[in-house]
Length: 338
Image 1: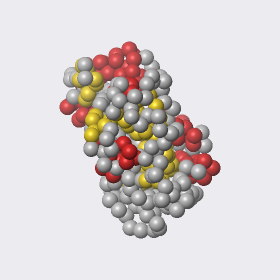
Image 2 (image 1 turned 180 degrees about the vertical axis):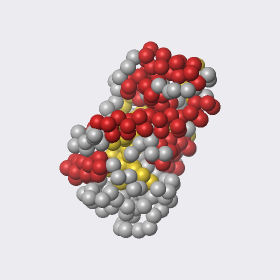
Image 3 (image 1 turned 30 degrees about the vertical axis):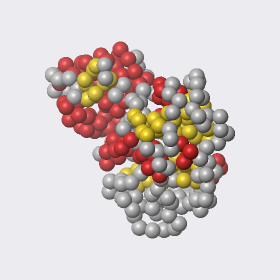
Image 4 (image 1 turned 90 degrees about the horizontal axis):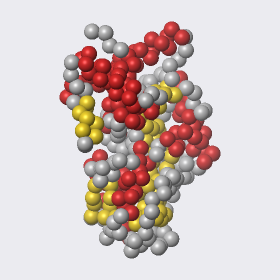
């Protein structure tokens, strides 16, 4: 059985996005063309790879089994083309945490980091799996322990977090809010909290007892749900451009200000030359834009940074770093906290 690499690539991208429209856009083809490629692949294999229904797109059991070798097939094809052309393949970088728009940060350094192929992971577990399987070279998003052995990360940015709430919320008129003032409200989350580490830790730390979950259908839909109920609130990094949602207000959080930590994650021993370039570009921008400022008397992090060199904790090596990559020390903060 001969597989068509274009069809396999279409399957892999759709399995990563779990959305035909988004997958088609990342491949720069029409959704109709994408659907045809997957239908031909399913016909060739004699089985369905996706469940398509009112609840969205999901992998079938056959699709889940097919995904790892399919990724390897696409990677091998790309490597073969690069070998013939005599040039290094692009650095494969995945991102996750899409509701918080990770590409805002990565886009500021991408032009200085060489050739990159950008993917779209679902969450930290799916991205770490792709790294360990060598399907990607690096990833960008919020890292939290425990990490599997063989992976390490480097902090890139600490971003202040605002609260978003309905204009009918009792606290909506305040110029700023302390996190503990939100205790009587309902934290609205775009998914199960056990998969949303930052929101889960925030709720535990500041005594938020009322918690409710939605389905992540994009930022505009999520914020519209927040705005329609006066007691709901959620958290969004301060620099995320908010869609125009009627009845919604964003308020800064202070005393302390929660910080959302963006990190570059990679597989130890990865020798792709673009990895050093990306790390260097991140460090340069962090220094220029003061991305790593941290004051423990003013700010809150779910995982407090260490004060100096120390042993690995929960699978994250606090001092491991890329060779030749410049370091940026934020105010009182080491470059690779856990």
